[in-house]
Amino acid sequence: MRGAVLLFAISSLASAGADWLDWVEPVITPAEKKVYLGLTPAERPRFEAEFWKGKAIEAEEYRRRIETIDAKFGSDKRGSGANTDPGRVWLSLGAPNRVKRIPSSRIFVPMEIWYYDTAPGVINTELRLIFFQANIGGPMRLYAPPVDTIRVLLIPQASTRSMFGPNSYITESDIRKVLKTGPAEDEVISAAVSIAPGIKDTGNTEILSQIASPRAILRRELSASVRSRLIVKRPPLDVVETVSPVAGSQVDIKLAARAQREIVLEVLNDSMPLYRHQLDLGYATARAVEYTHRLDLLAGSYRLLITVDGAPYVYALDAGRQQMGDIWRFDSSYGAGGRETPFEFGGRRLDPSPSGRYAAVALAHPGTVKWAIRAGTETLWRAVSTGERLAEIELPRDMAKFGRCRLEAAGPDETRSLDFAPAQEAAADAVILSVNANLAPARRYAFAGRQWLVRGELAQARQAFAASLAKGETEEAQVGLAQADALAGALDASRERLRQVLRANPNSFDALSVFAYVETRFEDYTAAAALYRRALALQDSGQLREALARLPGQ
Image (cartoon, rainbow, N blue to C red; front, side):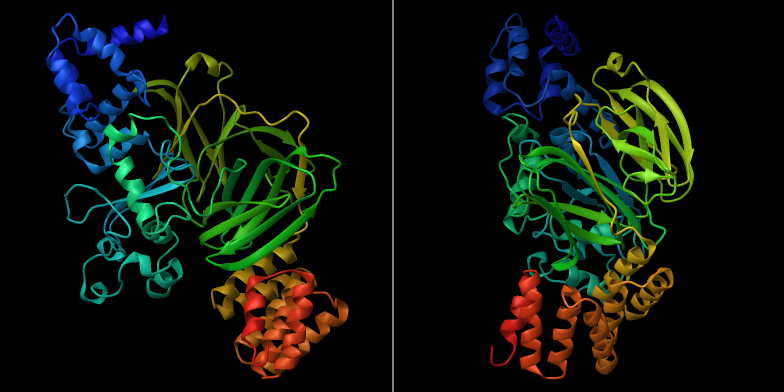
């Protein structure tokens, strides 16, 4: 019955043939149009009804998208929105899950970054698309790496004309060495190099050509045709980012998976490893688990490599955005106040759940959020909440009555949205694995110091390590200070500090690795090689193997 009502509604919207053709112009092929025009008025309604069979979109959703893009990007004239780059992408993929707006700054022209969790029919991972305005008052244009270069995103001036070549020859690290961006602009760098993690060169062009063509993408089955070289089908990962009391952002993650032997989490900044934690399980058989972990990350782009029983999964993560976070749903319970555990705020545990009774967004600053549930252009429910780090709201108990709808959270400067989908509940017997070993204050400061070291910011690194030692004596801080000494050329001080660490713990992988570097600087290659081998016996590392191979005589 619903299908019959829907078909009647669509037919009534376009009772005349010319009107219907105007609606479907972005997706109808020349051959279909020729057939349609050859039909009698009595034959056309059946063609119109049959037209949507086999399409990757329902007629009702298509109509909503057309109305939206005509109003947002067009001139309100029917079909005008589909003549713009943003309109074509919106028509192909629907509304983005998140939009980052960057007004004209001292570096960049006005632009928006659209984030999609996936691009159905194209790729099963996050997509990040830049739309930029090259001329004041001109249309927003879709950025295409490596056809465009990051130069088109820079405000034209003499100092930037020859700053960068084709994006295929530069990395995010190369760009950051030249451009000094603030946290609000840092997201541009990742999106300018590739539109999805792990996609290189022509892979970007292939994806863009598909999503900018509603006629092609909406006419086929929604199975991914492009694969990232890094990302395969992965277990779902929930990420909640709030302001860190230590440095940058506090990032809580929850992985829902099945595991038997072990779960290993590694954090990489570009190709540099920052953190590694291995959780040994030892179950007799694979069990449903919910693995939770909290990290303090400086602003930047990261990869999370999570290995479950030997199967690696890679997730992209941009931290330190200093903006409102994505909407997430959760159920709530009260834990032991004062603990440091993932997804716990003020002693209250928030458990991410796709069917949770509550919704929340992280706030960059204390403020008010206006909530709304919408179906198309109709508003079904409104509410308001305020918060310091999180703005939370209890959702209506009878959500089912709204049917297919969208939750929106509007902050002072940004708006987030979330589609309501059928609940994907975790298994009832899922084991909660909460990793808390890294959350003592001393260890949190030490981890921040390590990140500063990787960036070459020795003064900030020393401050973080000093803050760590003020909270408690940790091996991580002592090794970090030794590494800072070595990088500053104080090799004797570094060597003595590392000897103290190794006297207390002869199997410290980090201390052995840094000590090997120090001995290399002293040109004692025999001692350096022995230290590298001791470290590799504890933990395999491609970087250490490469460093060992470069030593003279090895």
